[in-house]
Image 1 (cartoon, rainbow, N blue to C red):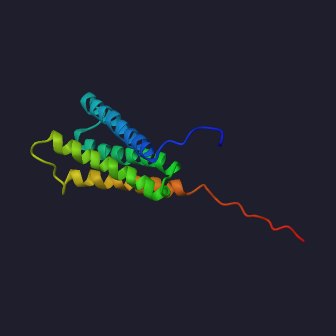
Image 2 (tube, one colour; image 1 turned 60 degrees about the vertical axis):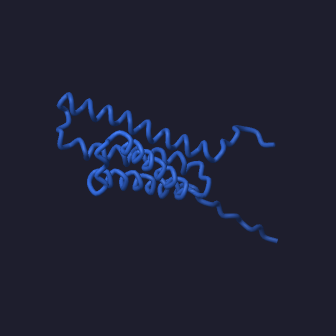
Image 3 (cartoon, rainbow, N blue to C red; image 1 turned 30 degrees about the vertical axis):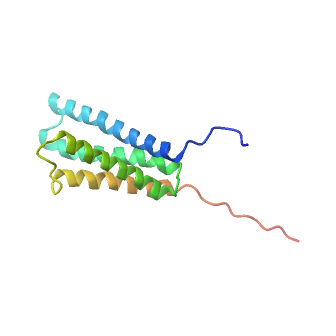
Amino acid sequence: MGKGKKQSPNELIFLKGLLLSFGIYLLGQLLVTLLVVKGALAEEGMFPAVTALCLLSALAGGALCARRPVWGPLPSAMLCAALFAGLLAVVGILCWEEGIAWTGHGGILMLCSLTGGLLAGVLGRGGRKKKKRKIGAL
């Protein structure tokens, strides 16, 4: 058998990416809320900050999954971003009794999380170039 670290099962890679995305998102939400309460960020600037936070957290989790791809960098990153978007939807459904405005801010957050996964997959694809083999002379 080979030396080095053991490969984690496929499900754990996506779980790690999902937890990283959600952890960054929650910590960022706390920071944005603190900035609004302290007056450093206007209330009108809260939603753009949350959308940027959603994109960046999906990008971070997707990049983690794209570095150790199961089916390739893009599908792995997109699956992680879709899991993150699903988790945001479940939390939104469970926390707000009135429902989520999917055509308003809720839909924008879902699109931002999927865009973060797409960016992670595209950026995770680069950097791995195949080396050319030289054919020796006879």
